[in-house]
Length: 241
Length: 379
Image: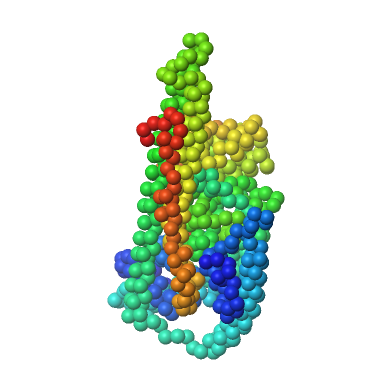
């Protein structure tokens, strides 16, 4: 969803929290970088109006609640619920508990798998980088002993130094990429569940415009799998993995 | 009051296991729908806790000296959940209905006894809650810094909007709107500061709803609610013995607060802080610790890794490293970290000659929910 879609003249359609979190602004021009100022201003204006309206409504509702509470105080205590009603609610609660437990378990597994994978790859990368750097240092020391730069195994000192620098950069890149992979995976798991709050449930389902549901599809996992994996043929001195 | 009869009656409900609290809460929510929003979506853990707490109350009902302080603490602590005096009769009615439902031999005498007993319990809890009414039930606090140190550890700085007094080593319960109605305990990693800001160390547990939200979703500007402080790692005011502090994982937080306390308030003493982690990368607060060690000649920081052969740091479980560096017989000892590490370190220090009464440990379990009936915050 973009700002021009949300900001149309439809004064009747209320701004929803989903609108605010999904709003996207166009990039500005080369001359004025950042978001398109006009779109942002217009959107801020809408947010301001919405807040003001909500505040007013809250005040009205508070009065109404007080009024109703007064009326309620005049009515006697309600009948205790029947055993059957209690049983039905109990079984609904159990079902909800099981769903939450399953979601937690799913999240636990994904997170723990992702982390295991991350740690394993990080360890391998560190170990192989360490071994190569070590070998390079040894080669350099050997050349120094043998007096001056000489070709060893077809690699000059300069080349070896380049290789070491490359490997160090490679190690950093692997680390950064693994980290963002893991984070994206976990963020996806997080956003899929757990925000549930009975108090936050809307009184009735809100109709969602069709074009929005498409963009709401969480696509993070698909995105990260497309992340470029550091490839060995990107530079000199790569090893098999 | 016929206490044996009441205990026999309670035992019948308790024997029904999860079914009894399930029945109780369903009854409560149907009779008073407004109470539902005081609880999280999933009631699974809540049910375990309710009957454990009631069981404690029933077990101690003839020992008022130990029961009353527990109830007072419960009453004070329930304020942060939004419990008000009007809720107590509602809970009492559903409790009675539950005890009746699971007992074929329910009779008017039992009903009268339980009504009287619950009335007393509610009275003590409400009175304690009223006494505490001068303090806020919870403190709103804004996240002013959020620093992801590793993929699953973040250091948050939060600033309460009103002064929140606590003692270094204590824990605060915390709720975030990202995971409503779930309170978890975290320890400030600093002694109280002039600007009131508090540093919290959060490790995202796999599948842990609150911790992972705090690490991965929370950000600067978010609002949290903090409950009143609780806990046990505080320094003994009557002692100026040197300190040995042993931390595993984010158990570092309360111990760092103790270091801060010695730095700010004294008394002057030597402090040895050992911090263990699996790998060097997981020592998430290393720069700050090294800076503290440089600034304070009385502080020695030792970092240890248990699963990182390439590291130049001390190798081994932190308990090994601590015992290797001993003896520590003249020290007061504070230990915080995973339960196994706390137990292991405590046992080995005692075996090496440290007096058990000088050691205080706190386990940082995967989930640190509300305090149990004794006010302990760990499982």
